[in-house]
Length: 182
Length: 182
DNA sequence: ATAATACTGAACATGTAGTTCGGTATTATA
DNA sequence: TATAATACCGAACTACATGTTCAGTATTAT
Image 1 (cartoon, chains in turn cyan, orange, brown, yellow):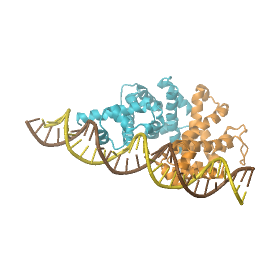
Image 2 (cartoon, protein in one colour; image 1 turned 90 degrees about the vertical axis):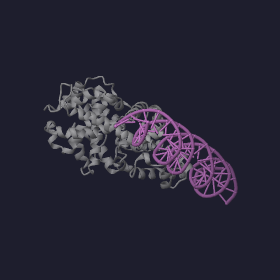
Image 3 (cartoon, chains in turn brown, cyan, yellow, red; image 1 turned 30 degrees about the vertical axis):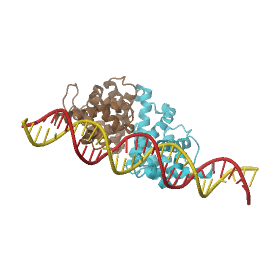
Image 4 (cartoon, protein in one colour; image 1 turned 135 degrees about the vertical axis):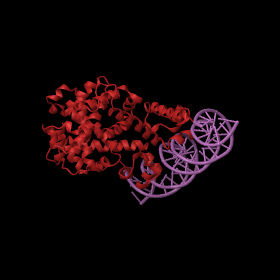
């Protein structure tokens, strides 16, 4: 990819992320984005069809990255193919805490609903693969789709609580809360 | 209140609710609302400052009504001041099922995020008042604010699951799922 | 050096929000 | 039933955002 393209694309993403941490997505204008990114109006529309598609591409990049990384080896002490179910979730929390691509800032902003929904959608596949590890007395009385929804929601809402309360706890403590709550 | 005012206000709400069950809030225009409500443009703005304030007033009416009713006697077999914690939640589910003011339609629409968030905010007070009834071995290890968030979220997400899956189950079954999940 | 390609920025068409105002219809009330 | 108050109408208007176009300029790859 042409260096100009790359630079423009990144400048737009950076400007967009910065604006998202300040104000509602709905009230961010294209004029503001290109002003912050310092690119021409026509350039913006050469890269993104609309403001909504910009958001969509941003979400894609953010969550593909974090979920891809969760599926591979990396520098943490927990890896994906461990049989303990908390390893995957702890791993995710640790990734979040590192704030790659400012993902935590976005999840903390007033646009958090937007990103938490996206986060939940990506999380479902992961939960499905870990489902057998959550078996229990009570859980056998519940429909599988209900259990998937419950586990996924609980994790997302745990993250939301963590962020809303200032991220004071360590990922380990949060993972413990998550498993206690279930 | 002048009969004309009342009729206009209701016509606007009806039109708005109808449109909300068809398309996204963001892409509903004032022109569509007044066309469906069959009122003049200036009349709309005499009643509501903006499209957003219309949404806000709608949410207020919907949830104040349903939560007020939950706190009073009514024609169900469960009432608020029963000590069993499930009575309140079962009661809420029964109210939802009655679809007062089309609240279920709105929670089912593609705008459900909008209303579920509002629903959750109103639910928190109720959960706080019922908190002692959810005590358990595990729960004592969790911070109170975390527990409130968890119980509230679980109820909202249970309702979401119920609606998304076609509302096949009775309120009694859903209430049971809710308590089993916790 | 050159051809391809990306960026610029102003001008433009389109569409929506919200306001204004003179005229009309409905309401309360006396 | 007459009257004053008030709600509604609707067209015209301002303001602003979106998305497009295009001729000119700068950067890139080769």
